[in-house]
Length: 416
Image (cartoon, rainbow, N blue to C red; front, side):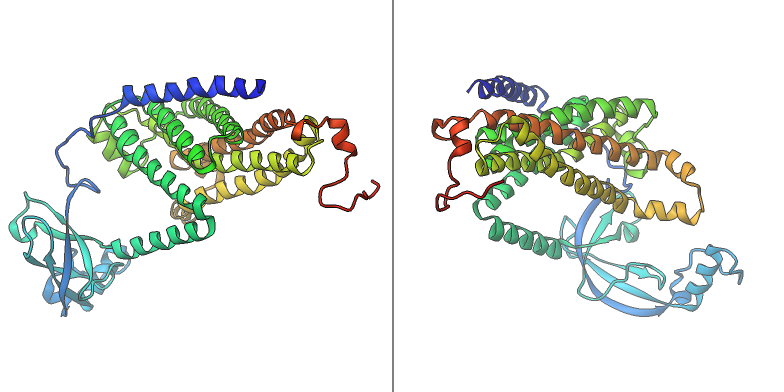
């Protein structure tokens, strides 16, 4: 009871501080801005491809570069192919917005990676300042149906295997998205400190997800405390090394657009916020697993003391560390695979690649998150062993528990 009171004395003020932080930092919504028409900052509508016919690229005038016959450059080779190739003229009908029912045509070149076919659902961009016949253009494919079907299969699999616990996990996932969309993102856009917003938002997600999925118990509280300590370590290390490595967080078109629209946003702080939020999901997995392992070890052998529980739990944790760290590194490498492929094509050295800010960001993100994961294992295991070793089943002394026959046996014990 004393240890449980200590945990409660830490977590209850922490939860209260998170609630205060949510109330103080809660935004009124994302601030408005003039649309730039660049990237994702465009007006879009839903549309359908109603007709596709093949035409000569030369007649359609699809070649933007006049063909000279010189194929030594990529532009010249593409121009020659387009001059001799067969293009497609697609008729697209706008299905939403004030221009619903309006049609326009678009030429699809043979070397384009995205080809259109009749009956296909697409997303079109709208630029009101352009000439009327050029106001609409196809910008992407409408993938709502396959994405919704995949999400449904995922939810069904979680519920069938996890049952009530799976339902609670889906509810926690929905709440996490709500916190992200209605608190974290708008608060950052309003100019609040990204690190502070990420800490408050991630803490709220952690408390809601863990207690909702695993119940209000000492076991869950130990996992929450272990996650909190690890997040603090990740925040300190991330802040130190992002500053030391002079990472700006402004490395691609998307971050550049954000900085252009909202110059007051601290981009390096946004990078650190991403590190903290990205590490939270894996941390939950590690801390809950370690806590459950220690509790099950205690159930299997109630006479095992604190040191024995810690040693047994840390052996399980070492296997967990090896698999989780490898998973984290491979996840980041998979996300950055096109970038790594470009460096390989350029035949850049490992030092040159690692020193570039694009890759350095991923390295710092991966290593800081991995250090937090590694540290969470001994911290959570020690806390769980301290709490659970204080329990005695039915008040049975430890000495009696050690000499009592195993439950479910026939009164005989094998000598060890």
